Amino acid sequence: MATSPNPMMLTMPASSLTDALTGEVRPEWRRFFQGLAARTGGTTGISSVDVQNQLNAEAAARASGDQTLGIEIATEASTRQMVDTTLQGAIQQEANQRATVDSELRYLIGQSASSADLSAYVLQSALCSLWSQCNLLFLPTTDPGSGMPWLNGGVLMVGTSSTTVATVTLEDASGHWALEDGTGAWIYG
View 1 (spheres, rainbow, N blue to C red):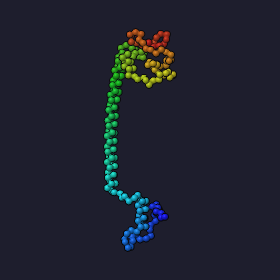
View 2 (view 1 turned 45 degrees about the horizontal axis):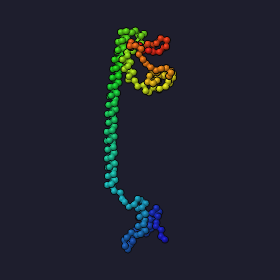
View 3 (view 1 turned 120 degrees about the vertical axis):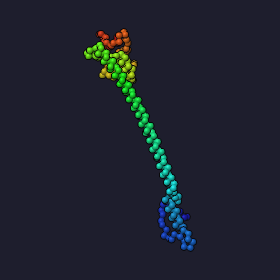
View 4 (view 1 turned 180 degrees about the vertical axis):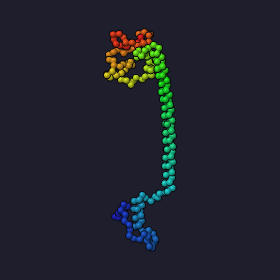
């Protein structure tokens, strides 16, 4: 039984390449070339035109990707500029509102209060306006202790026990806050 030669084990034939009588490639050389072709990837050649076409396609795909990325970067920069402009407008509007409130406070203080009474005066409209803009949902809903603020059913508590009834009511229409005698609690009116 004849065994086929192992294509991984190639030995170069010692005979001449062609038959002297017929001019044909000798069988041992044919086997050598077939084994050599099998070891090097077969008999299919590489087309330089195909390789160049593949390189051109890859270069075009990369250029398209770079262009798309450039457009996305420009869009992001434009979006950030728009957000920054909007934010600057909001900051300016808030500064204008604060300046108006400060002006009103200075006017009232100048009209009716000495510097010793300064802490007792807050414009109700200013207080309502500032508190209406606050989002206090980040505060804990149980007393964290140490005089830290917390929310008790939607009422802001600071250093107050959780057993305290949390309500804010108007006692009269005077528009002033004052300490209630005997209890130390703040009342409005």
